[in-house]
Length: 265
Image (cartoon, rainbow, N blue to C red; front, top):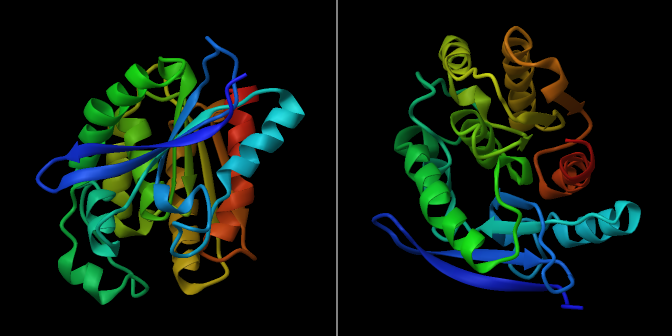
């Protein structure tokens, strides 16, 4: 039996330098392979030591799932190495359309947002995935691959899943910053991405603080857009209005998403 472990990688990110990637591998027998979940904010998902605002404790979620269902996954955490503004830029795509900034968006981001979500997406698809699939015991193919993130990462998870439905069978879209876009732009973009085979979408939002309130409103209207064109069995919405915009809210939601990905997809 091979013990569980976290392995650090350093992969080249365009025009910036190397990016930290942390890969969690569950305990396993020789030759055993696992589905894989790629996640933004790798510094916040495994433990408190590297987290700035708290941890998702995804390893605990893996342990619970192993105990309850006997199933497990490899988790790939892509770090935000360069601060909040760079994070907002690299996780926000241009192609969805016209931007709209509610009052809750920090002024620094309103002034300085330079969306590079397409670059981040190419980094995941063409650099991170090949490295993971060549070095670790992952099951390959869309049916074994998911993406998950929160806030700007939730927006990116939604974006990459719909832009690359051939790569992912599921996406955890937690507290997504849909409110950055005009409704019509979002509707037009969603409709333009519909194909015969689409990923399962788990949309979550709280509403207990000002930012999460705006996120909740935009999650509701995005869900309404999706209801008109998306396969209903591939769409889930979870609203917990008592929850704020933080890791302690996303931790239990991730556990449910993990179970759905591994056992019900």
